[in-house]
Amino acid sequence: MFTGIVTDIGRVRSVRQTDRDRRYEVETVWDTASIDLGASISHAGCCLTVTEKGEGWFAVEVSGETLSKTKLGDWAENTRVNLERAARLGDELGGHIVSGHVDGLGEVVSITPEGGSHRIVIEAPAPLHRFIAPKGSITVDGVSLTVNGVQERRFDLNIIPHTWDATTLGGLTVGDKVNLEIDMLARYLARWQETA
Image 1 (cartoon, rainbow, N blue to C red):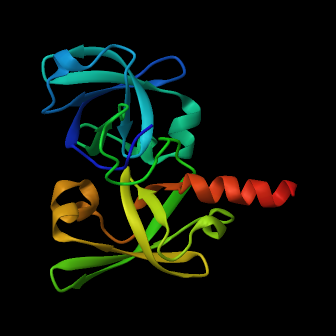
Image 2 (image 1 turned 90 degrees about the horizontal axis):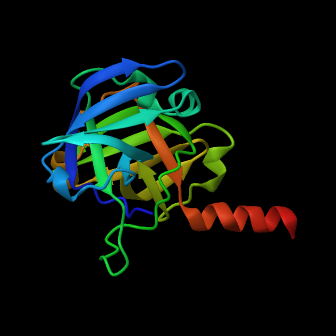
Image 3 (image 1 turned 45 degrees about the vertical axis):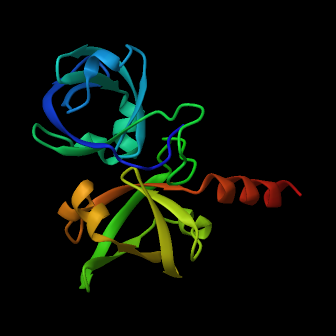
């Protein structure tokens, strides 16, 4: 589990295709001696397992399924990546409960400066848009955010300067794809309604 609070922007330093999967090496400022092999780390909102590590870097392997359902298939050398280590019992829950399972890809429709902040409008795929509500939580590329408003398949977010600078959101442009994870509570409420 994660909280959607990014603690490092990593950089893809190596990409290698294996028989069915893809191997990425990611540079980080974290002390990699404190990262166990087999540890779960959120990469732009996608939970991946550490399979190898060295000083200042670690490796993950990504399945074909994940590559096809997330933006990870577009990663190349020097891609910047929002990173978050798994939450531990007793950690501060600064964002919201995030599973690290990407539900779908959204597309950035517009980015507008508003004071010191930026308003980003994203179009969600159907039927995922039904689970996005005003003032609800959503994870965009691994970042826990509050939805401002919703209009049909589009929703907008207000990105404060700290989040703009401390995550990869500040590098987004119109037309970019983003990993989306809906709020876990919304997912279970919808399922409950389907079976009730």
